Length: 457
View (tube, rainbow, N blue to C red):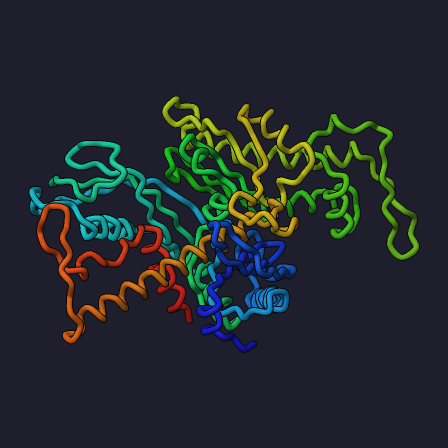
C-alpha cells in the first residue's frame, strides 16, 4: 500500500487510529474556521487480532488496520501517512508516586529544566520485570513545602516536589502496537492513552473541574478515567467489556455468537424488571433445526448479572480514588461512553449501584454541526478523541516549524535583527520573543514513547 506522507502535510488534515478489540477505526478530519472538527472520511474493519485491548495476532491486526485505512482513504479521496494511535488494554495499570529534587540555588527561578529533571527521575523507578513506564503526569507541585501549586515555573525555592500519576504497561504489548503500525505502512505520529482520548471527546472542561468519572465500555475492556480540578487523578482498565456480555448470552441461551450479539443490541436490557414474562423472541435454528424461543426476561437477567459485575468493579476503583472524601467528591458524577454504553437502561442501573448522577457521553461537543450521525455515536468516542489529539499534534508541529524557520532567518547574518521594546523598557531581539512554545509533559511522554516504539524491531 503506497503512502504519500507529503499529501498528508499539504492537505492540512489529520488521522486517528483506534485499535479496539471488536473494531479498528481510521478517522480523517480537520479543524474548520470555527474551531470545530470536520470528519472527511472514516473506515472501519472487524478487529481479528486483538483480545481485551492487547494485540495477540500481529498478522491479523496488520490486515485489519490496512482494511480500515483503505476504506477511510476511499471515502475521503485522501492518502493516510501519519496516524495518532490509542493505547489501552488489560496490561495498563496506574499508580501514584511522589518525588522531589533539591535545587542548588534557591535564589534562581524554577524553569523547564527543573521539571524535566524531576520527571526523568520518576522514569527511573524500578518496575516489575517486563513492564515499562509509559506515562508520567504531574498533578500538583510543592515548592519549599507550599502545596497545591499547578504551575511552579517562575517561582523560587530549594526543594521542588510533585505528585505524579504514573501509567505502566507491558513492554511486549506496547511494542506490538508499534510493529503493527510500521508493518501496515504507516508512520506513528503520536500515542495517547485511550481513556484520555475519549474523555477529551465527550467531557466538558467544567465537568473535569467539578470532578467526573468517565467509563468507556468497549468490546474487550472497560476503561476508567477520573478527573478533578481539571487534572487526571486516576486511570484503570477493567478486563471485561461488551464482549463478555455477548459470550454470556451465547452460553446461557445456547446460540451462536452472531445471534447473541444481535439479541444484545436489539432486545438487551440491563434492568430485568422492565420485561414481562410473556415477551419472547424466536431465533432461527441452525441447518433446519427447530427455532429457539428466548424470553426477554431471561435475556436481561443474563445481561444484568454481568453488567452489575463490571459496574461494581469500576465503582471499587472510584472508591479507591477517594470519592467518599468531601475534597475528592466527583460533583459531575459519571459519564458513560463506548459501544457498551448504548445498552438499554444502563444509565439507570449505574445510578442505582453508585448513587451518582450519570449521563451518556456523545462525542459531538467538538464536531461540526453537519457531522454524520454515525460518528456522533458513543461507539466512536475514542476515535474522535484520537483525531482531536492528531489535529492538536499537527498544529503544534506546524507552529514549531514556522518558529524554526523564523529563527533560521534571524540567525542568518545577512538578515537584520529588529530590536523589540519589551514592557520593562529593555531592548530584546525578536529572536528571543519567538521562542518555541514549551512542550507539555504529555507531549514529552508521547515523544519518549514514540522513540521507544520506533526502536521496536
